[in-house]
Image (cartoon, rainbow, N blue to C red; front, side, top):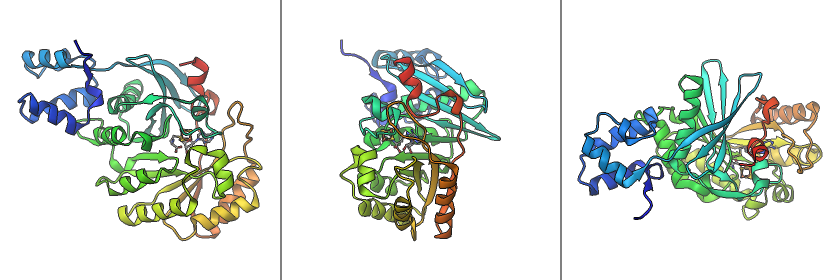
Length: 343
Ligand code: SAH
Ligand code: SF4
């Protein structure tokens, strides 16, 4: 017999199509989605408002892939970092960040990443596989369960490049946003990309008000190429153009992520290039002191440089903030937890 399909690999449309083929009424789709992504059940038998025959039929065709928290690290500031393991033993990192009324989940979109950014622990470790949409939604549900409260924000800033797994990511965002799922507001769901142009263009056309962040890290081509070899083929003018078009089309302000590393992308020349890139477009620059990861040879910029970057950008009329570091005491840098546990 063929291996059963993981129901978590299907988008809502694919689920509706499959149920249509089985001759099931449309409302069954919403019912099953509520069990899967509203309640987070692990077994079709728990879907108690489905007829027993339908539960048996679903069990014959599908499995609900497991997702379990295997380790959890607690930070003094309340941040919790998890290693989540899926059915096939693949594991990823997920982070929960409580902040007043808000609970933000930073979820992974791939196990590993093929983009090879030199400052990133995930990039240094290489690529394992894409995650399914169900595996992304389940990270949100696991964190909600662990904190015992509603998730208000979700950011695709864990492991992986979301636009290298576009369809599954979009399907996941829709389940997260759905009132059959954890109901995270579209504006409170952010996708962060290293700058894959086709993805940015597609994302601009999506009807939902999802938020976009782009990891820039340098507006000098040679520096960016060195830091982010996976997007060498993307020129800075074309990236800027795609962001301007995105802002025009969606009416939304994208964020530029810029991790400051001493002597690498925090020099006066780099600052001039960054101001030149960001000035005059609808954008928000987020400055982050780089998180030093083993083997990368990068040090955090000193506070004076961070301030100079912020003040110069603000003077040029560019909306800018400095990201407060969270969970620094629990291996905050992307990919470190997984590396340490050898997952
Ligand atoms: N692949 C996507 C999203 C995952 S990475 C992307 O690159 O945007 C999430 C964010 O963490 C990105 O902005 C990335 O550049 C940043 N990041 C990765 N390693 C980092 C480090 N060592 N210090 C600071 N930021 C880092
Ligand atoms: Fe991948 Fe993002 Fe890390 Fe680059 S920064 S290697 S794109 S996860």
